Length: 268
Image (cartoon, rainbow, N blue to C red; front, side, top):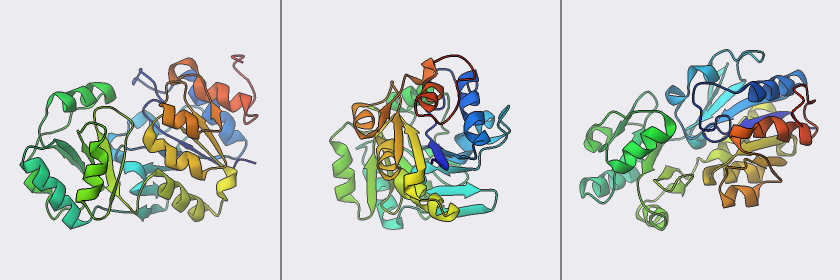
Protein backbone atom coordinates (compact mmCIF):
# COMPACT_ATOMS: atom_id res chain seq x y z
CA UNK A 1 0.00 0.00 0.00
CA UNK A 2 1.39 3.37 -1.03
CA UNK A 3 1.35 5.94 1.78
CA UNK A 4 3.63 8.68 0.38
CA UNK A 5 4.25 10.03 -3.12
CA UNK A 6 7.18 12.22 -4.19
CA UNK A 7 7.00 14.32 -7.36
CA UNK A 8 9.76 16.04 -9.27
CA UNK A 9 8.67 19.40 -10.67
CA UNK A 10 10.31 20.25 -14.03
CA UNK A 11 9.35 17.67 -16.64
CA UNK A 12 7.15 15.76 -14.19
CA UNK A 13 4.48 17.82 -12.43
CA UNK A 14 4.75 20.23 -15.36
CA UNK A 15 5.91 19.67 -18.90
CA UNK A 16 6.38 22.48 -21.38
CA UNK A 17 3.55 24.63 -19.98
CA UNK A 18 4.56 26.54 -16.86
CA UNK A 19 1.22 28.36 -16.47
CA UNK A 20 -0.11 25.86 -13.92
CA UNK A 21 -0.84 22.22 -13.15
CA UNK A 22 -2.91 20.40 -15.75
CA UNK A 23 -6.43 19.18 -15.04
CA UNK A 24 -5.26 15.57 -15.09
CA UNK A 25 -2.34 16.19 -12.72
CA UNK A 26 -4.62 17.93 -10.22
CA UNK A 27 -7.07 15.01 -10.54
CA UNK A 28 -4.24 12.54 -9.83
CA UNK A 29 -3.14 14.46 -6.74
CA UNK A 30 -6.74 14.72 -5.52
CA UNK A 31 -7.29 11.00 -6.06
CA UNK A 32 -4.13 10.09 -4.16
CA UNK A 33 -5.01 12.39 -1.28
CA UNK A 34 -8.51 10.90 -1.10
CA UNK A 35 -6.86 7.54 -0.51
CA UNK A 36 -4.71 8.92 2.30
CA UNK A 37 -1.45 9.26 0.38
CA UNK A 38 0.92 11.96 1.67
CA UNK A 39 1.93 14.26 -1.20
CA UNK A 40 5.43 15.78 -1.50
CA UNK A 41 7.32 17.87 -4.00
CA UNK A 42 10.92 16.71 -4.57
CA UNK A 43 12.79 19.21 -6.75
CA UNK A 44 16.21 20.56 -7.50
CA UNK A 45 14.78 24.06 -7.21
CA UNK A 46 14.93 26.10 -4.02
CA UNK A 47 11.56 26.75 -2.42
CA UNK A 48 11.47 30.37 -3.58
CA UNK A 49 11.79 29.21 -7.21
CA UNK A 50 8.76 26.93 -7.06
CA UNK A 51 5.63 28.58 -8.50
CA UNK A 52 2.83 29.54 -6.14
CA UNK A 53 0.43 27.20 -7.94
CA UNK A 54 2.45 24.35 -6.36
CA UNK A 55 3.40 25.80 -2.97
CA UNK A 56 -0.03 27.34 -2.36
CA UNK A 57 -3.52 25.88 -2.38
CA UNK A 58 -4.03 23.50 -5.30
CA UNK A 59 -7.60 23.36 -6.58
CA UNK A 60 -9.30 20.19 -5.38
CA UNK A 61 -6.21 19.14 -3.43
CA UNK A 62 -5.25 21.83 -0.92
CA UNK A 63 -1.60 22.25 -0.02
CA UNK A 64 1.00 19.55 -0.51
CA UNK A 65 2.20 17.94 2.71
CA UNK A 66 5.72 19.24 2.26
CA UNK A 67 8.60 20.16 0.00
CA UNK A 68 12.01 18.59 -0.59
CA UNK A 69 14.00 21.35 -2.27
CA UNK A 70 17.54 21.80 -3.55
CA UNK A 71 17.76 18.09 -4.41
CA UNK A 72 17.04 17.06 -0.82
CA UNK A 73 19.22 19.69 0.85
CA UNK A 74 16.23 21.53 2.37
CA UNK A 75 13.12 19.62 3.49
CA UNK A 76 10.15 21.33 5.12
CA UNK A 77 6.56 20.70 6.11
CA UNK A 78 4.01 22.47 8.30
CA UNK A 79 6.16 21.77 11.37
CA UNK A 80 9.18 23.53 9.84
CA UNK A 81 12.50 22.43 8.34
CA UNK A 82 13.23 18.85 9.42
CA UNK A 83 16.28 18.11 7.26
CA UNK A 84 18.94 20.37 5.77
CA UNK A 85 22.47 20.13 4.40
CA UNK A 86 24.89 22.73 3.07
CA UNK A 87 28.09 22.51 1.07
CA UNK A 88 31.28 22.51 3.11
CA UNK A 89 32.92 25.98 3.10
CA UNK A 90 36.12 24.50 1.65
CA UNK A 91 34.20 23.01 -1.27
CA UNK A 92 32.44 26.32 -1.92
CA UNK A 93 35.84 28.03 -1.98
CA UNK A 94 37.26 25.38 -4.34
CA UNK A 95 34.41 25.78 -6.82
CA UNK A 96 34.48 29.57 -6.50
CA UNK A 97 38.20 29.52 -7.36
CA UNK A 98 37.52 27.46 -10.50
CA UNK A 99 34.77 29.88 -11.50
CA UNK A 100 37.13 32.79 -10.85
CA UNK A 101 39.67 31.20 -13.20
CA UNK A 102 36.99 31.11 -15.91
CA UNK A 103 36.70 27.31 -16.01
CA UNK A 104 32.90 27.33 -15.87
CA UNK A 105 29.92 29.36 -14.67
CA UNK A 106 27.62 28.50 -11.79
CA UNK A 107 24.24 29.37 -10.36
CA UNK A 108 24.48 29.37 -6.57
CA UNK A 109 21.39 28.48 -4.54
CA UNK A 110 21.29 29.70 -0.94
CA UNK A 111 18.47 29.43 1.63
CA UNK A 112 16.88 32.78 0.78
CA UNK A 113 18.46 33.96 -2.48
CA UNK A 114 20.44 32.91 -5.53
CA UNK A 115 22.90 34.34 -8.04
CA UNK A 116 24.55 33.50 -11.34
CA UNK A 117 28.29 34.06 -11.61
CA UNK A 118 27.68 35.13 -15.21
CA UNK A 119 24.55 35.07 -17.36
CA UNK A 120 26.31 33.18 -20.12
CA UNK A 121 24.62 31.50 -23.08
CA UNK A 122 24.11 28.29 -21.13
CA UNK A 123 22.67 30.11 -18.14
CA UNK A 124 20.25 31.98 -20.40
CA UNK A 125 19.23 28.67 -22.01
CA UNK A 126 18.42 27.29 -18.56
CA UNK A 127 16.44 30.43 -17.74
CA UNK A 128 14.32 29.87 -20.85
CA UNK A 129 13.91 26.17 -20.03
CA UNK A 130 12.64 26.73 -16.47
CA UNK A 131 10.94 30.11 -17.00
CA UNK A 132 13.23 32.02 -14.59
CA UNK A 133 15.87 34.74 -14.62
CA UNK A 134 18.87 34.53 -12.30
CA UNK A 135 20.38 37.74 -10.88
CA UNK A 136 24.06 38.09 -11.73
CA UNK A 137 26.52 38.57 -8.87
CA UNK A 138 30.11 38.06 -7.79
CA UNK A 139 31.11 34.51 -6.91
CA UNK A 140 33.19 36.00 -4.10
CA UNK A 141 29.96 37.07 -2.41
CA UNK A 142 29.02 33.46 -1.64
CA UNK A 143 32.20 32.69 0.30
CA UNK A 144 31.27 32.10 3.93
CA UNK A 145 27.54 31.88 3.19
CA UNK A 146 25.43 28.72 3.55
CA UNK A 147 25.11 27.17 0.09
CA UNK A 148 22.53 24.45 -0.43
CA UNK A 149 23.39 23.66 -4.03
CA UNK A 150 25.26 24.87 -7.10
CA UNK A 151 24.46 24.36 -10.76
CA UNK A 152 27.77 24.01 -12.63
CA UNK A 153 27.56 24.65 -16.37
CA UNK A 154 29.91 21.96 -17.60
CA UNK A 155 29.80 19.21 -20.21
CA UNK A 156 29.24 15.59 -19.29
CA UNK A 157 32.49 14.12 -18.03
CA UNK A 158 33.29 17.22 -16.00
CA UNK A 159 30.89 16.07 -13.26
CA UNK A 160 33.47 13.60 -12.01
CA UNK A 161 36.20 16.25 -12.13
CA UNK A 162 34.14 18.54 -9.88
CA UNK A 163 33.60 15.67 -7.45
CA UNK A 164 37.34 14.96 -7.49
CA UNK A 165 38.38 18.57 -6.83
CA UNK A 166 36.06 18.78 -3.82
CA UNK A 167 35.96 16.76 -0.60
CA UNK A 168 32.26 16.33 0.12
CA UNK A 169 30.10 16.86 -2.97
CA UNK A 170 28.14 14.69 -5.36
CA UNK A 171 26.95 15.70 -8.82
CA UNK A 172 23.64 14.80 -10.47
CA UNK A 173 22.47 15.75 -13.94
CA UNK A 174 19.06 16.23 -15.54
CA UNK A 175 20.16 18.56 -18.35
CA UNK A 176 22.96 18.68 -20.90
CA UNK A 177 23.49 22.31 -19.86
CA UNK A 178 24.76 21.73 -16.31
CA UNK A 179 25.07 19.38 -13.35
CA UNK A 180 23.69 19.86 -9.84
CA UNK A 181 26.41 20.00 -7.18
CA UNK A 182 25.09 19.11 -3.72
CA UNK A 183 26.59 18.03 -0.38
CA UNK A 184 27.33 14.32 -0.19
CA UNK A 185 24.94 14.28 2.77
CA UNK A 186 22.21 15.35 0.35
CA UNK A 187 20.52 14.11 -2.82
CA UNK A 188 16.88 13.35 -3.49
CA UNK A 189 17.30 9.88 -2.00
CA UNK A 190 18.48 11.27 1.34
CA UNK A 191 15.69 13.85 1.33
CA UNK A 192 13.11 11.14 0.69
CA UNK A 193 14.56 8.86 3.38
CA UNK A 194 14.63 11.72 5.90
CA UNK A 195 10.99 12.46 5.06
CA UNK A 196 9.91 8.84 5.38
CA UNK A 197 11.68 8.62 8.74
CA UNK A 198 9.95 11.87 9.75
CA UNK A 199 6.60 10.30 8.81
CA UNK A 200 7.39 6.78 10.12
CA UNK A 201 6.67 5.35 6.67
CA UNK A 202 8.63 2.51 5.10
CA UNK A 203 10.40 3.09 1.73
CA UNK A 204 8.39 0.13 0.43
CA UNK A 205 5.26 2.23 0.99
CA UNK A 206 6.49 5.16 -1.12
CA UNK A 207 6.39 6.01 -4.83
CA UNK A 208 8.58 8.50 -6.70
CA UNK A 209 7.81 10.27 -9.99
CA UNK A 210 10.61 11.86 -12.03
CA UNK A 211 12.26 12.36 -15.37
CA UNK A 212 15.94 13.19 -14.84
CA UNK A 213 19.21 11.77 -13.61
CA UNK A 214 18.84 13.61 -10.30
CA UNK A 215 15.59 11.67 -9.77
CA UNK A 216 17.26 8.27 -10.08
CA UNK A 217 18.45 8.14 -6.43
CA UNK A 218 14.96 8.69 -5.03
CA UNK A 219 13.50 6.19 -7.52
CA UNK A 220 15.90 3.56 -6.22
CA UNK A 221 14.94 4.01 -2.55
CA UNK A 222 11.17 3.94 -3.09
CA UNK A 223 9.19 0.74 -3.43
CA UNK A 224 7.54 2.01 -6.64
CA UNK A 225 8.86 4.54 -9.13
CA UNK A 226 7.55 6.17 -12.29
CA UNK A 227 9.66 7.70 -15.06
CA UNK A 228 7.93 10.13 -17.36
CA UNK A 229 7.88 9.39 -21.09
CA UNK A 230 9.98 12.51 -21.63
CA UNK A 231 12.54 11.25 -19.11
CA UNK A 232 16.20 10.42 -19.59
CA UNK A 233 17.35 6.87 -20.35
CA UNK A 234 18.81 6.69 -16.81
CA UNK A 235 15.47 7.58 -15.23
CA UNK A 236 13.56 5.08 -17.35
CA UNK A 237 16.05 2.32 -16.54
CA UNK A 238 15.74 3.00 -12.80
CA UNK A 239 11.93 3.15 -12.70
CA UNK A 240 9.53 0.31 -12.09
CA UNK A 241 7.01 1.90 -14.49
CA UNK A 242 7.42 4.19 -17.52
CA UNK A 243 4.55 6.61 -18.08
CA UNK A 244 3.43 8.85 -20.91
CA UNK A 245 4.98 12.30 -21.06
CA UNK A 246 4.22 15.10 -18.63
CA UNK A 247 2.37 16.89 -21.43
CA UNK A 248 0.26 13.79 -22.20
CA UNK A 249 -1.31 13.20 -18.75
CA UNK A 250 1.56 10.94 -17.70
CA UNK A 251 1.10 11.19 -13.93
CA UNK A 252 -2.64 10.59 -14.09
CA UNK A 253 -2.40 7.63 -16.47
CA UNK A 254 0.38 6.05 -14.41
CA UNK A 255 -1.63 6.36 -11.20
CA UNK A 256 -4.64 4.72 -12.86
CA UNK A 257 -2.52 1.93 -14.37
CA UNK A 258 -0.92 1.23 -10.99
CA UNK A 259 -4.30 1.10 -9.26
CA UNK A 260 -3.59 4.14 -7.11
CA UNK A 261 -6.61 6.17 -8.31
CA UNK A 262 -9.80 5.63 -10.31
CA UNK A 263 -10.11 6.91 -13.87
CA UNK A 264 -12.55 9.72 -13.09
CA UNK A 265 -11.58 11.64 -16.25
CA UNK A 266 -12.02 8.74 -18.67
CA UNK A 267 -8.52 9.11 -20.10
CA UNK A 268 -7.44 5.48 -19.77
